Amino acid sequence: MRRLDQLLASLGYCSRREARAWIAAGRVTVRGTIADEFGAKADPNDVRIDGEPPDHPGGLLLALHKPTGLVCSHEAREGPRVYDLLPPRWLARNPPVTSIGRLDKDTSGLLLLTDQAGLVHRLTSPKHKVPKIYRATVDRDLAPELVARFASGTLMLDGEREPCAPAALKIISAREAELTLTEGKYHQARRMFAACGATVLTLHRTQFGPLELGDLAPGQWRELPLDFFG
Ligand code: URA
Image (cartoon, rainbow, N blue to C red):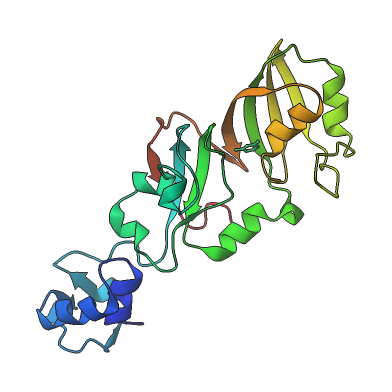
C-alpha cells in the first residue's frame, strides 16, 4: 500500500505537491473510483493515472547497449549521459535509476540500469565475483605470456594497494582479446593492458554475469525481470 501523492512522485510523474493537484483534478482513480484524498493509501495495482496503470511501480531493471561517447555519470556537465536514452519520467524517479557499475565514455556494450540499490550492491561487490566479459583491441601484438600474467592475481595497477584478482584472457587474434573480470576497479581493463605495455584502442562489454548483450542495437535497451539475477 502506498500513499497516492508519494506513489506519483516516486515514479517520476510529478512532484509531491503537483501530485496533490493531479489528484484534486480527478486524474487518479483507485479501483475505478476517482481518488479525492491525496494521502489515501492504495495498492499500486488498483491505481490508474490518467486511465493508465502506474509506470513500473515495482521497480526497473534494464539492459542497455551503451554506445561510445556517453557517460554513466548523472552529471550533465560531464557530457551526454546514458540516462538521456531513457524515457524522461524514469529520470525523475526516486529511488533513482542508476547504472550497475560504470563503463567509460569510450567503452561500448552491455550496461545494466536499475532503481534497486540491493541489486547494484550484489552485482558490483567484488565479494560476489560476478564475471564481466570484454572484447578489447590493442595497439600491438599480444604476447602469449599475458594470459598467465592476467591470471596470476599479482598484476598491480598504478595507484592501487591490492593486485588485480585473477582475470581470464583469451587471445583471439594478434591484437584482439577477450577479457573476463570479476571486479571493477577504475578503468581496470585499460589499466591492466597498460601495465603490460599495450594501449587499448577499443573496449566493448559483451556479457555481465549470465546475461549476454546479444543483438541489442547501440543505444537500445530492453527490460529484464527484477529477479533476472536471482
Ligand atoms: N575497464 C575499463 O577500462 N573500462 C570500462 O569501461 C570497463 C572496464
